[in-house]
Amino acid sequence: MRVHRIVVFASIMAQGIAIGACASGPAKTAQVAGTAAAEGAVAATASSSLGRINPSLRDEREVHLADIVQLTDGGENAEAYWSFAGDELIFQTTRAPFGCDQIMRMPADGSTAPKLVSTGKGRTTCAYFLPGDGDIVYSSTHATSSECPAPPDRSQGYVWALYDSYEIYRARADGSELVNLSNRDGYDAEATVCATDGSIIFTSDRDADL
Image (cartoon, rainbow, N blue to C red; front, side, top):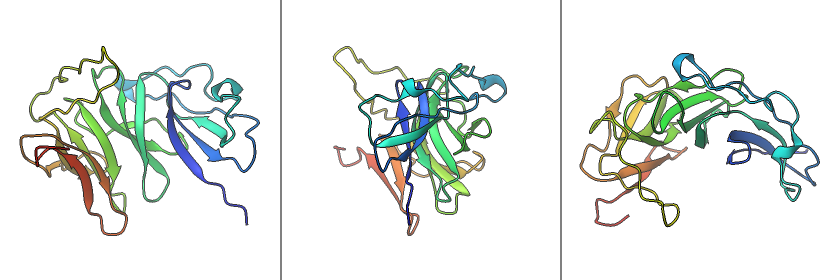
């Protein structure tokens, strides 16, 4: 029996999130399809490459991926994670009218536009579904300020800001019933959920180190 593994990744070349099949042999073509990442005020214009084959999205040296499908276009879209059922993705995105990352979820096939599930305030990161897919977790700074925190100095290269205002929240999959799980001053973020028992592992500076 032949098994196809589907992977999700963020691509600078594709300017968004894409999915593709793990190739059993050299990947000869790349198929690019998708929808405009839009919902009301957060609409983003789809590029002309969406919805049709665009081999230029795959480097000729790439032999591991095939049948690439672009799911987002416009803004910055990354950190996409699967629902446990395998039919949805949850990810962080910076797009108008938001000044910094917010959390959205969307069907894994890109059949409908992403939906905002964070508050639209502050900066968010690293969302994840809980087992059963009825709840999600993500980190946000919105309780400290509705404004985006100052970006870090990246003049010497990429750095990740450890905002003390990050808190880990649990919510329903539509963003309702938000509950602060960490509730402390200090960095708490990058949560990942165990598929077996639903326990959460995360990064924190509570022991004076990460």
